[in-house]
Length: 462
Image (cartoon, one colour):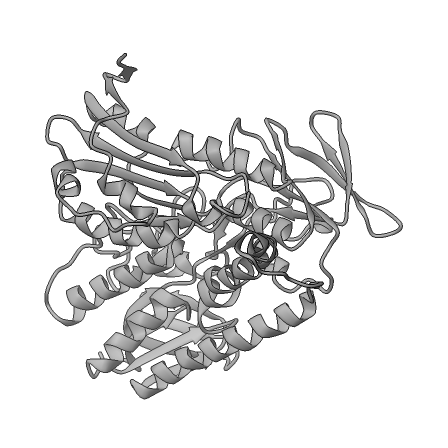
């Protein structure tokens, strides 16, 4: 059978664009459709604008810290609308790069919602026509959960909307305590907003190392962020003056300028026509795939957040490259989701690779824990009360480093570098024979020669 395209990609985010562009580079006829903006969540309403806002939110501390180094900083002010406009200009530039990359590789890009009509059929709504493809990739990603069961949810915003608020609120309540909630709390607080986190669990950042979680909690409270745990928002009422009366399960009512819901994400699979093509999903709507990203339909693959494997942009790109290698180069390659470096761009930021202490003790009967908690040299003269944490987890039997955690300045950068030797299977002895770079915070990673403590079957030894 002759098809209109060798490959058609639904979704113009990082994973979809990479799959389409690489297939085009190899000489295949490729089409791609995106109903919003090319670049997807990461470029348009996620990682990139978030990091820009993180940068913006750190300057007030820099102005304060400068005094300790002899600088006199005059009156300062912040213009929210200018930041929003600058962000918009940057993501438009990046979106244009995505489009030009597709075009230069012969990929036909459509600005349209696309849905499946069968194993080889895609309906383009904007053009009201069906196109056919030998292979189809679904890479539509996800969207923030609006928590519609919450009374008054319509008076709250989600992360997509936080980037483009008409005005910066004077106060905000953020519901949730995952990395999105925690990062936005740091952003808003850094921009002068009275910020509160409300979370149903006992501590922020569930899934991260407990010691890292607790220390960031302390650091956030030092920065004036209020953290209310083991409570949820029961109801949001809109006041006559536009304030949000936020009722908590503990009985307290917070009167704030804005409420943000950061309660997880949902796949964008509703009304996508998956059932017409025989593509199976789980109970939450995420597309089920095998180890090569193939769905239950032989001609359709799914990449990135829509599969709920690891929801990170580089992972979607990696999955796309594995798809290209397997299907178009004849070299079967499975996505490797082990030892992925992760960062939380909080204040201070977190960088982590591998297992948390809590996970490691479940896997290794004897675990050596190396840690250093200290004041970063950067703040030796600033007077700022802040701490930095370095932590290595080592399987005592093999001496292999199975977890690395950093909280402090440039933690994300360190985590990326740490991921390389850990991926290679490095041991603690490899760290020990590596010369320190002095003076630096990172040198602590190679100068912790003796375990701080050892855990045997999960029990700390004296």
